[in-house]
Amino acid sequence: MKTIDIKRTAEAAGFTFDLGLTWIDAYGARWTWTGESDETGMALMQTGEDTPERLSHVYWTFGPLIPAPRPVTYADRKAVLAAPSCAEQDERPTPTPTPLTFAGLLGRLRGRSA
Image (cartoon, rainbow, N blue to C red):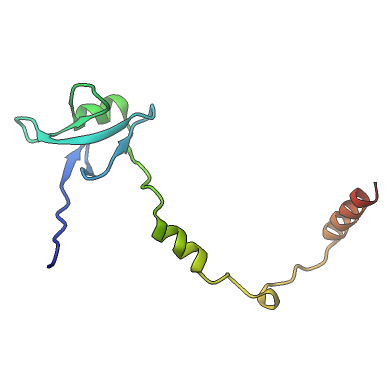
């Protein structure tokens, strides 16, 4: 069985907002779509138990809005751990020795002898 994912979007202040996401305002409050629209078709957003507000009102009063980061899943963690390292030890570029790198080496050696 094939699942079709239909994204519901809304426009406010010339920006398109994906209503399936949680949006964070400039004060750190998280806004989600209530699933409803007002009489003009503007999406109604809500934070916590507060009364729903029009998306355009939320944007102009509390904006700018940024999408909330999605939680890290088990698959994300597994993909990072299974990813190959960026380069093998002998493939890494060796730094060009300069007086500054030599001074840094001496500073680290001085710290060990103290």
